[in-house]
Image (tube, rainbow, N blue to C red):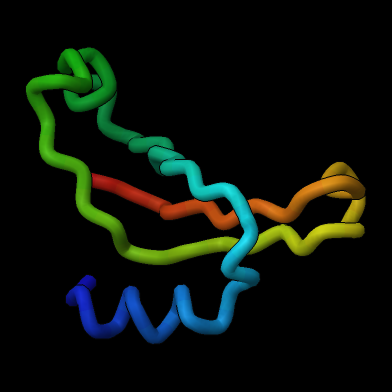
Length: 68
């Protein structure tokens, strides 16, 4: 994902939400055994839970979805 695309997606999100990164699971057992500090993670999408959504009653959250 290019920075300009990520910025456009994030501009649609609540600017007061927390942000965390979520690694997508991989089907390759070899890759899953590599120490995470040795791998590059690339952002390929975002997810947002809005304040008031189930499980997010007090604060919203934006998740950066990553994979190798």
